[in-house]
Amino acid sequence: MGEPNLFAWILLVFGMITLLPLIAAQTVLLRDPESRRAKDLIIGKGREWTNSTHRKSAIAFAWSDILLVLPLFIIGSTAVLSGASWGYLLWIALGFICVYFSITFWVMERANSVKYHGWFAYLTYYWGFFLYWGVGVIIYSFLQLSNMIF
Image (cartoon, rainbow, N blue to C red; front, side, top):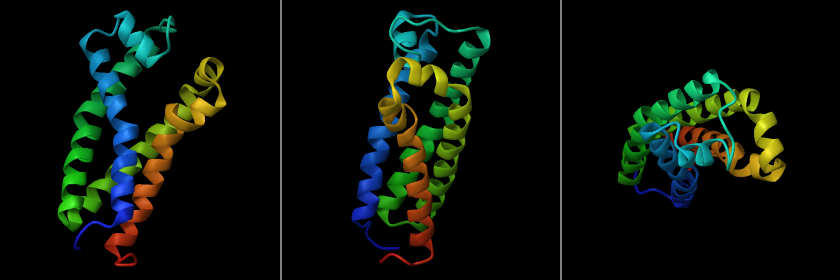
C-alpha cells in the first residue's frame, strides 16, 4: 500500500481527538462507577444515573471501548502507518463499530445530552465526532483498498 498519505494522518489525528478522551473517561468509570468523577465525566457534572439500566449500559459500553475499540484503533492505526493493507480492514471494522454506537446513542442518550449540553456540543464531541470519524474512515479505507486514492 505504501506510505500513508495526508488523509490517513488527518483521520489518525481526528481519531485520537475523538477516541482517546473517551477511553480515559471510560477507564475512570470502570474503576469506580459510583464515583463523582466518573459520573461527571460520563453523564455530566452533578448528574446521577437515571436508573440501574443506565449505569449498567454505561459500564457495558466502557468495557467494549477498552476491550474492542482501543485495540482496534491502536493496532489498525499502527498498521496503516506502516503501510499494511490489513490495517485498513481494522479501521473499517472500527468505523462500523463507531457508526453502530452513534446510532445506539442517538436513540438512547440524545434527549438528555442535548438538554444538558446543547445541540452544538452534541453534534460535535458527544455524538457527532464518532459518527463522522466512523463514516470517514470506512470510505477512506475502502478507497485505499481499492487503490482509488494514491
